[in-house]
Length: 183
Image 1 (cartoon, rainbow, N blue to C red):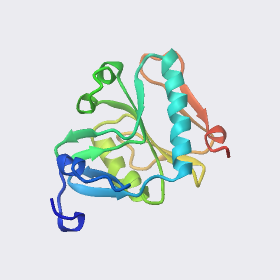
Image 2: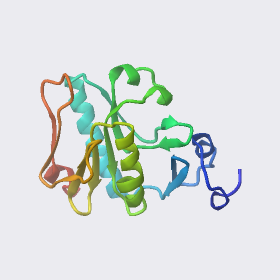
Image 3: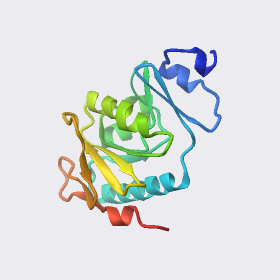
Image 4: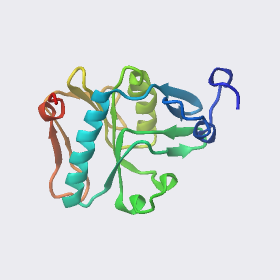
């Protein structure tokens, strides 16, 4: 495999073969997405959301939450690493990334090096494959963009995010003041 600059089209297998250098590599329709390792604030928000989702899904058994690294792919030229995502229990129980296709909720936390990819390239992919709900967390602006497959523009939330999965009795809710609180 040549250097990243010499290749115009990437497959998922090519991305998996890139040596670990501290960057995060993804491909969407052959476009290589490279992000530096996440900063601490990013990881703190990922952890808060992941723990809250896991706790919620213990009582509402409508899916299972994972956090990256994870190799999610819908084709040979697609490989993404959503920060946090929920799949059905049936798919989660396989413990096989290649069989986790139906993401019910996908969350990306913006970082300076991932904003373009998360807001445009990956958002459009998630809409294209029918992810019913995509949250784009902006810790610097203390807001969340909420995307659904048919949206041309996001809903912007500054108070609370809410997810009501099919078959759940209660919604998952997070007050943004809690999510964005300082340590």
